[in-house]
Image 1 (cartoon, rainbow, N blue to C red):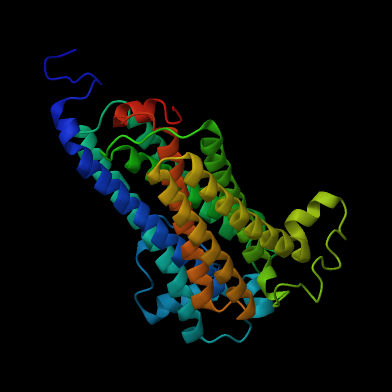
Image 2 (image 1 turned 180 degrees about the vertical axis):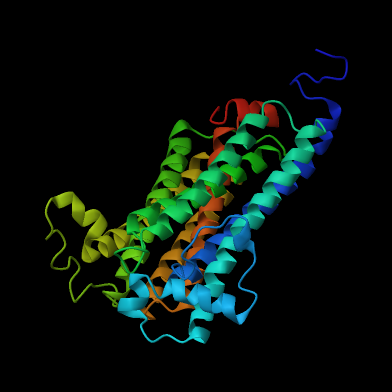
Length: 366
């Protein structure tokens, strides 16, 4: 250990840089929040197939002339979505859907720059602690995979389908949620705060299970979007006048209903929403009785946001998936994920005021 090294292996300039590294990570987290909403709007406006090529570098620039616009439109007219759904679309109408998909891809590229450039600056200047480097490198790899997964999703709708595969859409959205939660976890580990008393094991496991349940709900929500299942039953609390609708498990083999049966997919999404509300309320009560004041406050807000989220889900159904309501529903889902991510990290690392290097080395330590 050098004379400038601290007990955790960090040198003074790395300790001093923690607030800056944390701020940078939070900017990336907010950018991911933004791209999820832009992606949601792209899906809701059915714009995702308007750009039929993956050009990571040259695709930064949109068509710059009328001839270039016509060329892009001609390529779109070769795919099934145009031929079966949008035949007769004008060039101006095509431009509207093109801009949504172009904006989605542009924000994705910007996130890559926002992450990579500061990462290299911090790394080369020796301002990132050694224990954190592999975690950040892992985030960089996940970001690259997410870009490739996005194109893999789009490609599913260019040959035979008129929409993208719901499976690939679910994978793409869930990966975005994973990266969002992952980076937020890292950012929160760099926050200096007062020690928080550790809660019982039950409380910590309950928080972790809630986080897992929310990730499952992201998958279910993506399947609903991919199948346009939100348009199938526009009533609440019943579906087609019944609590358990007909046709719930009509496909064979049985498990295919979970992913391809519109009735089952919407039913599962509804039930998971109710389950999350009940579970968050019970968790809030548990935290109030057995946890610290800080944990109880966080759990209370998580329960409140979960209730709001279900209400927005109902509103999304009743308004026929109105774009503003649906995007608000998606935004609050990201907020719920953020609150739970921070809550889980803090209840698991609450026995003492854990230094960032220690938190990263043992992310689930008590």
